[in-house]
Length: 293
Image (tube, rainbow, N blue to C red; front, side, top):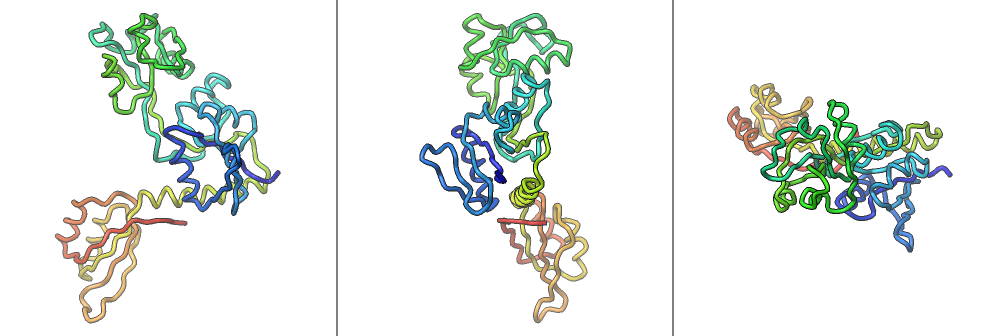
């Protein structure tokens, strides 16, 4: 079957953004009755909607070719199953950011990760936690929790926890303090390590080109302005992440040009003020919907 299957989270913090990202790449899908398998309409790419911790396993088992999942989940499954190998990270994505951190009860006489040597750590990520600590020479016992990890110290089950942290609100509510960050994570697109057929590889290359365009557009701005001819070089230097701009003559004003440029970095008010300071006027900053380099 010369179709590519992409596994994404069926519900949760990555679900909507994963689907929106694929749709931004021009993919449209027909939903099945059980809503777990969506058939690609205009492009031979189908969706599997599954639990997030099933996504790396489906890739490792060859059930699907691609998957969008948090790096924390992928690393946990790979270190648990394959010693940290078995999946290729094709693209790091710009959403789903979090961190896997150690946390201890307020007032605990634990000042660093090294103080957890020989102690018990409750976590939903035992393989990843133990692997990172072992690399640092810390021999701690991990206790697997699949629910509310933050209650473990209060129950006397563990001396510390290793859990995902976004804002720290849950830690504070349970009288825990963040000790150390073990692993920074974001959503990523993963693929199988094994080779694809030539036809599937062509489809994957097309999808990745579209994806790169979407990701680049999200970080880019289109800047238009009027510039004195003798200030074009200085204005170009001030534009963040811009390549050579396009210049057009202004009707009735031979001393100025219209300058258009794509800025591949954030454009802040400070940039606009600096541009105005060297003579730019009529400055417009517009979002970029799609790009294909």
